[in-house]
Structure formats: C-alpha cells, structure tokens
Length: 313
Image (cartoon, rainbow, N blue to C red; front, side):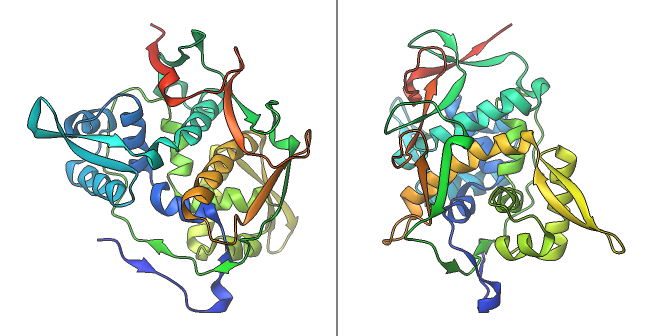
C-alpha cells in the first residue's frame, strides 16, 4: 500500500517541480519496464511478465498503480471476454517523447548487450530511427545549448511528497530491451532529482540535499552510483575533510533530454493554475520552446503509430 509522507517543516521544502510530480508516477524501474513492454506490443499480463521478468505480485502492484494514475487502462479482449489486456491512455501515449529520448540515450550510452539486435524503424521513411529534438515554433533542430531556462509563473516551494514502494529488485529476464540501461536512472526517483539539481548548477552536497529533499545516506548512495555509472564526476574543492563539487559528464549532460521531456509531460498533467515552474525558450527563434521529436533522416515529427521494432539479425 502506498503511504504518502510529507515534511511539515518549511526548512524541508523543495522547489516546485513538474519533474518531481512526474517521477512520483513513473520514477520506478518496474513501471518503466512495463511501459516499454506495452510500447513493444505486449498487452496481456503473461506477455508483460515474460518481457519484463517482474514477479507476479510486483507486476500486479505496478499495473494497478498505472491504472490508478490513468496511464493505463485494463479492458476485456473482444474475442476472449474472460481475458483482459492493458493499453495506454492518452496520458500514457503522451510519454512517447520521453520513451524516444530514453531510446536515444540508450543507443549512445547504454548497454548494447541488452539491446542485442533490436532497432526502432521510422516506418514513413524506412530508416532506422535516429531521434532528434526539434522546436515546435520554428521547426529547427536544437540541442540543450540552444535552450534558455528561466523561472516560470508556477515557481515556488512544496513539501517533498513521496511514496514508499515495495522492493524493486524482483525481476530477472534475458529478453532484449531497448531501454534497460537508461531506465535504471529515471527509474530511481532520487537519481533523477540529483541529475536535475546538478544540471541547474547546484554542485555541492548540501545544496543538492536541499534541492532534492533526500536524506544524507540516500544522497550519498545516489552520488556514488551516478559517479560509477559515469554520468557525473566529483572534483574536490576542499581537503581535510574532503568535499566535492559534482558535475555532469557528457554522458550525463545528454541524459537531460530525457529529463526535459519528462518535465514537459509533468507540466501538462500536474501543472498548477499559475503555469509551469520553468519556462523554456529556443535561442535561435526567440520563441517559447515546445520540444518535439523528429527523424534525423527525413525531418518528419515522429508519432507513436509511425515506429516499429525490427531485428537487425
């Protein structure tokens, strides 16, 4: 059962953040593996379990959670009314840009062995998909260096609500995965929030702790694991005792495309009446940035119905 916890002390408030709210729903490795399996065409309980390797109880719990959050629906199968299948809602489909950025990062930095021969094809042009980010205002391809970030009307402070979750390590599978490595970061809420903090220029332990709301032991563990993964690096700024500044590596910097798309999804479904906490502007055209994902080969916007999973074997 989910137990909601919140700090009542103003000293423990964190920045208002659509990323935090979104991670409360999908910042969980089993959830992301379920969504990947459904994106890959699995729809029945047994199919999803076979693809993800999740234990039945854990899978049931996460499917129930996704239905409660209106990301999935459960419906009877027309030709087998006693059987059911799971499908994405409109809210779930809107995670597609996050999935594409996970796939992009995985191709560049993830676990090639986990992917094995799986590829994503952009069916309209027939090319193996190389997703790139495009500005919805001018259509131009952009990188993170082309983006201005500034506080939005929804900026403020909030209590760091979080849910306790069952052990997430209850899965084992030899099935190939398009996203296995990339979801290990996003699938851990604290790791994703640490990445967000460092990207926004917060470098030191105390500042990251205040920004994320993580307790010291949790934060130390995540900084260690993210360093071992090669997405951040630690550089000492003080000796006796040794204290560090933390910086994103190129591998970590590229992960922020995922976080940006997640933030926009969170703005849409968890935003406040005042507006988003962060506003993005495309430097090249000077207009509000509404990122889209396009195919590098043909330049067309990539839609969920326009991709297929193929084997390179």
